[in-house]
Image 1 (cartoon, rainbow, N blue to C red):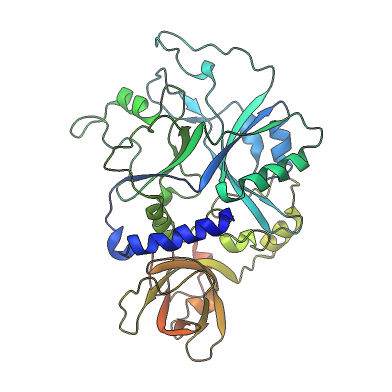
Image 2: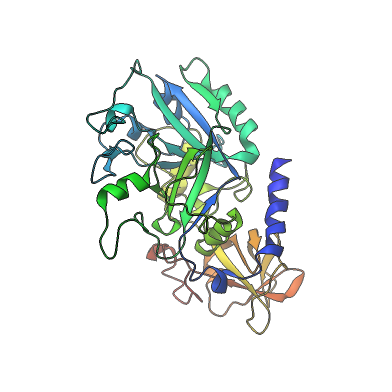
Length: 393
């Protein structure tokens, strides 16, 4: 029910945000959106790392390592000098099909930053060897996700809690986006101010999106406070974040990645840093490793643009599930997985989608033409045989 409601919300957004990405968000400055489509789960206990390591596609052991990335030039009461960046991962079926995606965060410990007075290190009340991680997950499958995780838990010493009321998920994105935007005067940057603006008194801070640099910054923050660097005129509806992802061809959550059906490699999970091939066994690992090392992925998630016969973008005519075919032969090339306004994305046969001689249209709506767009973040080997791609995102 929640999943169908979210799909209806996407459809409703189309009537509100009629401008296409090409003209609507192409030159948009920094924006921030509270992601109501996401929720937050907390894992805690001495077996947290071991538990998630055996389930998820990425190497969760990184959160147990002492080294991290420098996140603050000047130590402050709200920002640690070193922190572990977030991680993107997924839980699969035993057959290697997608179930749920996770953005994992390690909260800052008190002893990793200054105390409230700024005169010395904070105090750690004692964690008795336990580890705490937070996960940003799809709200439409939250109850089902919690049940699945608890089935896998068995005797592992790990607590799994729904903390959606306490925390919210946020994304910062747009053109000319920088971590320290609006911090400092003139051409200089106030480094202490940058540290303070990047995080809050609880130690939560903005992180670079673990998938792609072009997606901006992501994090979770206490629900009772506005995140740093989010000004009133910069906060915008989540549908704009969906448009931003459509432009770059990045799906998120079970509403866009069919649960129990999607093959993660076709949704470009390797390039999105969601899979580790060095970590060892996890649920569904065998199929993922075999497909990856075979080296041939014939279908991939591709950004799409919908136009009429004159090349003018058309809005609200295509919905998720529409079949994309070759204009002449009617051969199926793929299917639209998500659509909003004149933009969409879908899993397509890569060779046919980017073949210059191939015209694409929507089955049953032949007056709508489909243009496959080649993302700039794709590595050359994915389309080296299809150099005649019509555009770049």
